[in-house]
Image (cartoon, rainbow, N blue to C red; front, side, top):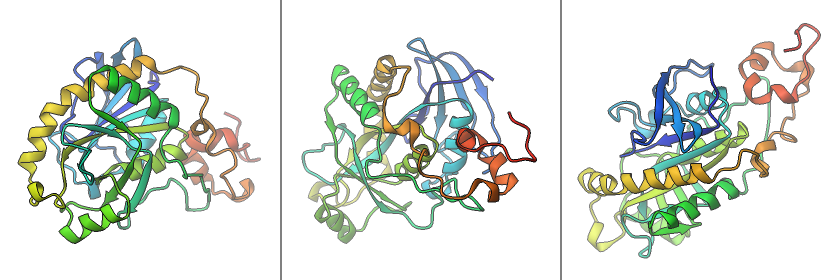
Length: 295
């Protein structure tokens, strides 16, 4: 299987990358179940990429139904070192207008019971997550957005809620009081798992509405969101393609060694199955046991 250096995760409204050529679909199975769908491998701006539609073909998966572990594990299996994601968000600030793009740098977690780690079952690890997005990848995405003529805001706090319902008015006002800038339902688990997998991660948050706090948006509707997403999709594809064009092949950020000091379990007590399942992620940090053959 040929490796793809760059992964692209398309969210609501971005179900394909028209510029990707030499395409073929790859269906993967993982120790955590099936990803949202097949990965589309191809070439974009001279670099091999893997595209995944986050919500599956026809947008059939709710945010709470997404198998985040399988999606990110599949990217790791394909050799991905960078993930550029795109997702629809509501704005919690007047100045972040519908059709703008936000590249956030922080999260507030309002999800409930989602699995957001590869670890457990006999192997414990604790990665740093103070800065949840890759600073270098986010900077390149911001440069690309400006070059594409988009109105872009670099930095900001993404409130990740459970959904699938939109916020109550009281919740929307609370998130604004907390300093939230945008609100969505998907990106937090992707970012946590990408960090554990030592993959650089950033997102293009495509603003579709003002959430219900705004007097002109007191009832957020799917029709409103889709209408704005359709306009934003072409811009998002240009921004992603431009970011891919700018990416260096050699990484110099902290993401590439996030697990170096994160594994806490003594190697000799890690269950063999856990070792095998997580080999693409932790293999370089674990010496073979006496019963294992060196790979």
